[in-house]
Structures are given as structure tokens and as C-alpha cells.
Length: 612
Image 1: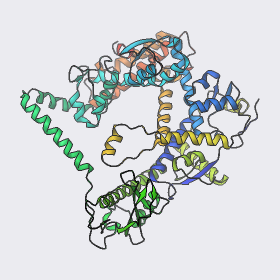
Image 2: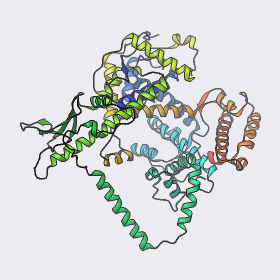
Image 3: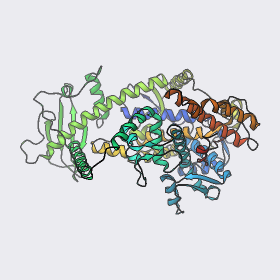
Image 4: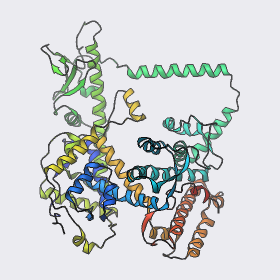
């Protein structure tokens, strides 16, 4: 038995959302950290075998485990004697193993070749599958099985949304109506191979497009129905090809004009004596002190706000605010980022030009841009800070927390003092009180808690600076990887881009753990959904399922109001999933075991099961 090291945790630091050490967006990232920490804690004590460790996606974590832990060990994910990035990787690896083992036992697995799945096959130079197809999952190498686990789970989530939409829209839905209900879905509904404007949900034709439309239709049922009537009425009118071409040209011109207007920076020209307090739009309850504190949080070293200028020289505009609200500006000439001997241009950023009378005056354009950027960032900082404080109070009944030192240093690029024992204990007390009040403080361990200390195996080696530095490098690497999506592109056109890669990673892992756990259905939950005690008798299971289907099947509820129809459909789909889960395990599985849902790897059966 390895030496137990439960007596200590990784170094942690105290953060106060009412203070000014963190920006609003950094505070929101802390909330994402706390949410992921809660999700990991719920998993409890688990056994990790070599096959489980092999399914950990991060190679540095696998290497650390092989060096510091025995090959087969039991670890309590409640313990924080390893950094959160390691615990998160262990949790994902644990669930991935359950899924890959289940799919391997099935052998031939039905998948839809989504973009993510095709990328895996392309990466390993295998024949790329197309559409809804069968693959010999059992014969694939272990690393490919691991990489396919997440896309296959996503396949199931998308297919379930399509199956539910088919119950509500058996004849499909007009794509234009979906777009009118939510124009932001434009890029998600692009389908170069579609032959009509109707999106059908009776079977999987294009998983990504259909799932996007299905989710929109389920959440906006009444609006979609009304918009379909408007679209159909419009389409009945005969269109002249010449009119269509003219309309297309006019639309392109308007779009181009709109982009041009977005890229223009309005002139900043106020009368002498104008301060930032006169320019900034204060909302209810906001004060000048709030603005000064927000400026301190977003400014460079808390003193000056910098905006980089275009070009290879690397010039920048620096803005400062004094106690009276005067916005002082300085244009600094540099050579590839290093200040030159040229005297900086100093000015009142609100009332004076950067270089009066200079032809073309590109320097003053940068002054105007810096002022606009500052006002935008101040508004965003105040809003995000208020939102973070409200969320912290609502979720944890407090605004002071302790988090891992490596995590905080990764999101701020600064060093922090380790929290005191009293601060850590107070944080634990507040968190426990909030969880118990919310009713979510539950243990989901498969082990006897009274014996967990005897079972848990810890590393022979303490968590030292080398391990913390590894965690720091992982989080820094996440932060520095910029993956742009369409929302980011629109933000860039507007001149603003707020990217929180560490927070996004924490959120994505949190979401993934939630999806994995919902796929790994406990049979006892399935029996509870069917309203019967655990049994190995398939006739009793079928009888319970049919009783629910007779009451809640869409064919039986069409006379009810729309809201009640949706509720009944949800109950029917949940019962249907529970039925398939139990039937697939009777006779060959422990009915109380935790294993994947029946539809994982058999997604087309979602559509077959709708008809009794």
C-alpha cells in the first residue's frame, strides 16, 4: 500500500469577487472552475486500471500517473491532492473507458459520419466513412476508439434531438422559418447537398444540419409553426428572375456598406473640460468609483490602458484617468515594440487631437479608436463583474473562494500568495452550506464511504513544484490556443474579441462530464422512470412501458394544449429510453449496474421505437 498523502492539498489561494485583483471575465472563469470542481466531486471514489489510464486524453497526465502511481489504483476524486486539470482528465478517462468498453462489446457500431468523426479517420489515414453507416469498432486500435468516444456520444445527443423533433414535426419544417426564428443559425443550417427548403426529421440525412434545426424547433415550437405559414404564403407569389437578381445585388451592397460602417471609428471631439464621467453611460446605481475600479482592473499594471496600433513599428496609445476624470492620452513611438527616442505625443484624449494639423493624421485615428475601445471595455468590465458577483451569491451564497494557485496564475499570468488555513476552511464551510441548501450535496460513489480511506491509494511522491509547473504549462497552453468560431469572427469585425480559453476548457469538460453521465445510465434510474422496482422479468417491464405509452404517446396527446403535448412527449421519450436500457440488460447484465444507454451505437433505433 502506497503512503497516504491526504493530509495536504495543492497550494490554493483566496479570491474575493468584491476586490479588484481579477477582472469580471476572470471572475466568471473562477465560477467555471468551481462548477467543474463540483462535477468532479460528485463522481466520488473510483478504480483506475491501466485501460482507464490509457483513455486519459492528455499525454502529460498519463506520463505523470505511470511515474507516480501504481498501475491499478483507487482514487477518490473528492480529494484535491492533485491539480484540477489532472482530476478532470481522470474523470473523462474513467467515463471514456466505460463507453469504449461498451462499444467494443457491441462490435459493429452504427454511427453518423459527422465532421468530427471524419477528422479522426482522416488523421489516422483510414477510409473516411460517409453518412449513416456501420463500423467495426471492436477492431479499431485503442487510440482511435478513445478519440471516437466523444463524437459518438455527441452523435447520440443530436440523434435524440432529431427523433424528438420528428414527433412534433412529422412532415418536416421549412428551413426559412427556422432561420427567421433565429437568424444566428444561418451557418449551422448551411447544407450544400440539400434538394429542398424543408428539413426532415424522419431519419438521419445530415446529422449536423438536422440537429441544429431540431433544437431550434423544439425550443420555439409555436413561433416556428406561425412562421411556416408566413413563408408558405410568400413562396406562392411568383418571382421574376430579374427581380431576384436585383434583390441579391442590393442585399450584397447593403451588407458591404454595413461592414464598412462597423469598421469606421467615429471622431472623438468634445469641448474643453469634458471628462470620462461625462462621456461614459452610467446605469442605475453605478458610480464614478465603480468606473475608477473597473479601469484599474483592465489597465496595464492597474495604471494605464494600452491600445496597440497597426503596422510593424508596434506603436501604442496609452490612456490614464486622474481623480477628476480627465482622460490623458499619450502616443508612444516604438521600433518593434521598443520605445524610440522620439518624444511621445501627449494630449487630452477627449478634447485634443493627437497630432494637430498633421496631414492624414493616422495618429489621431488611433487616439479615437483607443477612446472607443476603453469605453467599450469599461462597460463590459462593469457588466461582467456585476454578473459574476450575482452568480456567486446565487450559487454559493458567498463571494470569497479558494482556488488552485496554478489555475489562478494561468488565467492572470501573475503570482499569488497561498491562502491561509482559515481562509480555506471558511471557503469549505460556505461551499458546503450552499450545496446542502441547494440539495445537491450527494455522494455518487460506488464504494462504501466508511471503508474509502482503506481503499484509496495515493502517490508515493508528494505533489511538488514540478507537478504544479506541469499543471501551469497545461493551462497556459489551453489559454494560448485560439480556436475561432463564427461568433468570434463577427466580434472581430466589430473590433472586439473576448476569448477565455481556460474558462472555455473548464466549461467544455464540465459539459462533457454531464453528457457522459447522462449516457451512463444507472438501471435503478430506468426502473424508477418506468414506475416499477428492479426486476429481471421482461413482461413486467413491457407492461409498465406500454402503460406510459398509452397515456403520453404523441398520437394520444394531439388534443391537448401545446405545452402539455411537449411535456407528454418528454415523458414518453424518457420512458422509451428507460425501456430500451432495461430490456437490453436483462439476462446478460447486472440490472443495477452503471453502463451506457441502449441507443449508444444504435442511433437509428430511436426512430423505429416511436411506433408501437
